Image (tube, rainbow, N blue to C red):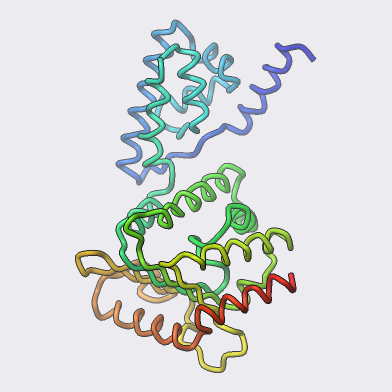
Length: 293
C-alpha cells in the first residue's frame, strides 16, 4: 500500500469516526470557548493558504470534521490541535489552546462536580452498585461505561472515561481533603471488565487506602441493619462551612444545600460508617477478596 493510499484510508476512517466530542448547546460557557478556538484554527488555516479539504488531508481527517471544528460544532481532541499547530507553523499558538479546551471538554455537570470536589475539604460517599468514581481505575471505568444501555458510542465512552480520570486529581491536592468511602461488598466482587480488571481494581483500592487522608470501609452483604438501602449518597463539605449533598432517588437526585436535606443525608452516611467494617477490617476484607479473585 502506498503512502497516498495509507493517508486516504486514514482519512476515510477518521471521517467515519469524527474524532472529538459533540458540543452541548445548553452549555453556554463551553460553547463560547469552543467557538473561539474554532475561529482561531480557521484563521491560522487561511493564513497558511490551505482550504478546509487540504487542511483535513494534512491532518488525516475529513473536510466535514474541519468545518465542524472551525464552526464550533465539534470539540477537537488535543492531538488535532497539536497536528494543526505543526501544519500551520503556529509555533505553539494553536497547541496552547488545549488549556482552554481542557476546561470545557467534559459535560457541564461533570465539570461542576469536579469543581466542587476540587474545593471540598471533606467528602463522604456511599457506593452501592459499583465503586465510587474517584476510586475507579481507568480500565474499570471504561468497562463500566462500555456496558451502559442504550450503548454509548466509542467517543462518548472515551469522553466519559477521560472526565472520570481527570477528577482523580483530588488525591494529589495540597492540603489534602479528608475522603471517606463506604462500599458494598458486591462492588468488590462483581467482575466488571473481567477477572484481571477486577484484580487490578482491588489492588488499586489497597493502594489508595494507604493514603493518610483516605478511609475505605466495606459494608458486608451479611449485615442485617443498613441505613443506605435507598441507594448511593455523597456529601461534600467546604472551607467556609457550607456543604452539598446528593442522595439517589431523593430530592430529585440533584445536589442539595438545604440544611434540612443535608441533615438526612449526613445522618444516613454517619450511621452507615458505624454499621460497616472499620477501615482496618475493610482492608483485610479487600485483601481476602483479592486472594479469591
